[in-house]
Amino acid sequence: MKRNPTREVRIGTVSLGAGHPVAVQSMCATRTQDVDATVEQAEAIRKAGGDLVRVAVDGAKDVEALAEIRRQTTANLVVDLQESYRLAAKVAPHVDKVRYNPGHLHHHEKEKPVREKVRCLAEVARDHDCALRVGVKCGSVDPDLKARHPDDDVQAIR
Image (cartoon, rainbow, N blue to C red):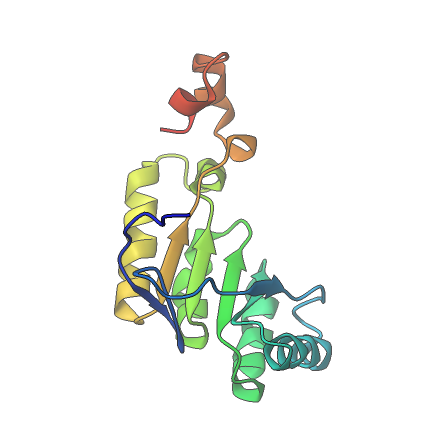
């Protein structure tokens, strides 16, 4: 199968795209605040050949735990910011990649345009030299946009 040309993206010690092999990624199934269990799982994933280890962050206590997790593992850490994009600046120093779904951005600071919020995420990633994945899915679209495009999910997520 012929692969489409892509550019290289570095995530910690792993490079993706531009002909690099596919990277294996897995997510810790622990509560992030349980530092010992999360480190144990992250290390198990890394030792089993996992290239990227995802950890969920929902609030300030998870951010504190993440800092300790970073100190205890050499895994390439990817943080899933489940809801609050405003935590990006606090987690970025401790991870190799930030993942966010901008469909969640309608919940926070409703007066700010989504593009401004995504720009904030991009600036944080740039300032901390970490990768950024901004994904979009129909399941988390702003309800007002969904109502304006009831039969066209693609238009609703634009």
